[in-house]
Image (cartoon, rainbow, N blue to C red):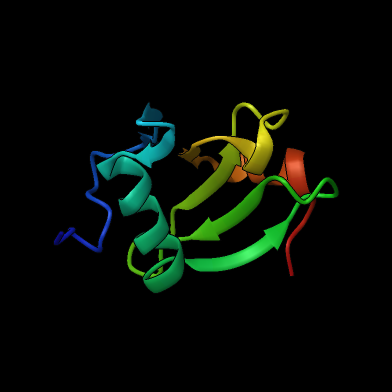
Length: 98
């Protein structure tokens, strides 16, 4: 499956989902795209104290993106969410970045 590796300027939220199919967890296209973005495009900046939230930066437009798992109580943390956050939100959550 081919994905646009860059984030569009009007994108600000990608929410993946999982479903069960024959007793197996199947990820949707959004999960697959988030995985490709984090592995091949976005620059990892830092991780929060819990280890469950990871801050990335888009190398092209410098926007910050927070990767998190909305149902962390699930095995594996559930499906990923990638949300654009502002510089103010970055500072509030992670402090001043070097």
